Length: 335
Ligand SMILES: Nc1ncnc2c1ncn2[C@@H]1O[C@H](COP(=O)(O)OP(=O)(O)OP(=O)(O)O)[C@@H](O)[C@H]1O
Ligand code: SF4
Ligand SMILES: [Mg+2]
Image (cartoon, rainbow, N blue to C red; front, side, top):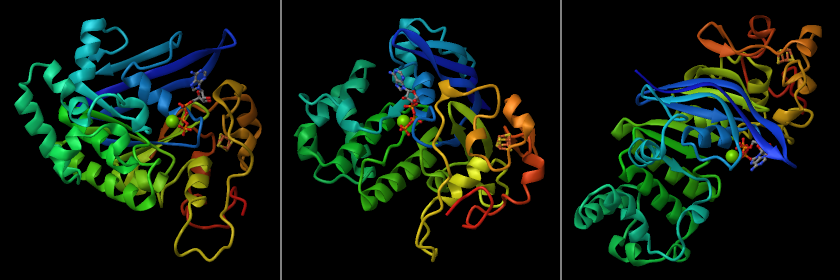
């Protein structure tokens, strides 16, 4: 069953009082219990898309299209409905926990706040969060609950953030780069806890990350964003052998590999475009070695190709030569 529909979402933010396009016509669905990885380079619009889902956008943001959760328009919700939606249906894990946890309240007060506000007894709320802290790998829980955020390490705080998000038993988890601020070992650990908890509880998740392979390992589907546009949506299981967009192939090839003997990592040539810089043609035009005349004049729509959706005029032709993201000498990726 479809839980979330991002329906032709567009977003403008004012810069020097002029509206600047940040997201172009993004359409994406999530089913109940499904995990979708929203992947792309910095500035692609991943955070703004996930923030739009919880309607947590900068003031003066101008939104087009709709966000529909369980049949209800999030954009049309009044304050009361929005507060209920945010406290029961959806929870967000932010990349930087420090800036989203009140520094002058204890970890315990932060964790039970939402539960008490919705009517749980304090003792019950404490029992729920204590159990959750245990499942995300935190020990000496009574002591941790009495501590202040600055007394906890980054990894510990991120686990607290995950516990806070899970405590309200949302149906949808928005996880915006939940582990990028952490060291590699803690990253793997926190990610594993999050993955197990999400699966055990049957939660849907929008997982925002730069890391395509990490997303493929914990998600059912992958949605690739470039310059505020969705360029490919496919099954995570097909990411290595049925890539259809040159940008997705470039992302795969530019990831470090333990088995690789090449001294330098392949990179996608050129610089990422900003959403507001796009002309009439394909967003990826300036970096794509396969561009034709039509790519300069007509923006490709996201359309169904096989079991994926892809925004490339040449998707069918290119599917054969973009099949293996691991080949360093693939056309379109310069070492
Ligand atoms: N308050 C703002 N006003 C104007 N532009 C903004 C604002 N916040 C973000 N942007 C711009 O919106 C675009 C998309 O930002 P967003 O944070 O969604 O990118 P992202 O894909 O999450 O990148 P990253 O991987 O670095 O987190 C960027 O070009 C960014 O500069
Ligand atoms: S539409 Fe053209 S420019 Fe865009 S990715 Fe496809 S081939 Fe490249
Ligand atoms: Mg971001």
